[in-house]
Amino acid sequence: MSGICEGRIVAITGAGRGLGRAHALAFAAEGARVVVNDLGVRLDGSPGSGSPADRVAAEIRAAGGAAVAHAGDIATSEGAASLVRCALDTYGRLDTLVNNAGFLRDRMLVNLDEDDWDAVVRVHLKGHFLPLKHAGAYWRAEAKAGRTPVARIVNTASGAGLAGSVGQGNYSAAKAGIVGLTLVAAAELGRYGVQVNAVAPAARTRMTERTFADAMAAPASGFDAMAPENVSPLVVWLGSAASAGVTGRVFEAEGGRITVMEGWRPGPTADKAARWTPAEAGERARELLSAAERPWPVYGAEG
Image 1: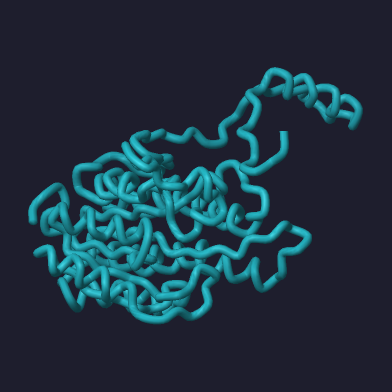
Image 2 (image 1 turned 30 degrees about the vertical axis):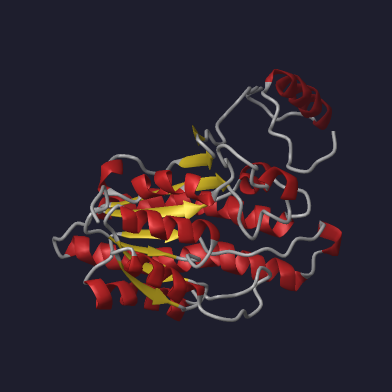
C-alpha cells in the first residue's frame, strides 16, 4: 500500500467500530502502519464481548497492510502510556495520534446521575488528554534529542460540543472541553514539531444511529452522506505530513462537506471606561445582543 501516509505510524483510539474503524482502514490504505486501540465496551461503556481491535487489525493485514491491536484503557495513565509503548515496541516510533474513543449515557440534566457525568467526561475528555500527554512527552523528548518529529494529533470533537445537544449535557461538555484542549495543545506542542487539530464529524455510528435515527439512516440508493468513511479522508490528511502548517483548527465533516469552524471571538463591544450600574449594563447588553449574530440553535431544542 502507498499513499500520503506511506511509512507513518498511526495510533487510533476507539478504532474497533464506526468512525475509528473507518479511520484505521483509511490510514492503512494510504500506507500507514496502524495501532488499533479499542477496549471493546458496549455503547454505554459496560464490558463487551470479543475484541473489535483484533478484528480491525486482522482486516487491515488481510488487505496487505500492517496493523497491531491494543486493548488498553486509554482513560488511565498506564493504558495511554501503553498505547504509545505499543507503537514504539512494534514499529519503532509514533507519528500520528487520532483520539476517537467514546460512548454515551444520555439523560436530561435533572435526571443525569453523577456516575453518568463522570463516566462520559472520563472517556471522552480524559481519554483525549492522557494519550495526548504521553504522545506529546515522547515527541518532546525526540525534539530535544535533535530528532524533531513531523507529528500530528487529530482530536474528535462534535457539533454537540460546539452548539450543545438536548439530553447530552455530559457529552456536550466533554466535547467542548476537547476543543479547548486542542487549542492549548496546538500552542504548547508546536515547538516540538507537533500539529494538533480537531474534527467534529457527523456520521452514522453506534452513538448516533439511535439518538438521531432518522437523520442517520442509510438511503436505499445513492450517496450515503452519513457513512463514517466520508469523514476519514480529512482525518487522514490532517494526520499526514501533507497538512504542514495547519494547527489549532476545528473542522466539521459531514458527507461530502468540509467546514472550517470559526470559534469564539469578540463581537459587538461597549466600553464606558468606568463602572456600569446594573441597569446600564443590562441596557447596553441588550443593545449589543441586537447587533450580534445569533448563536447556533442547540440540537434538539424546541423552536
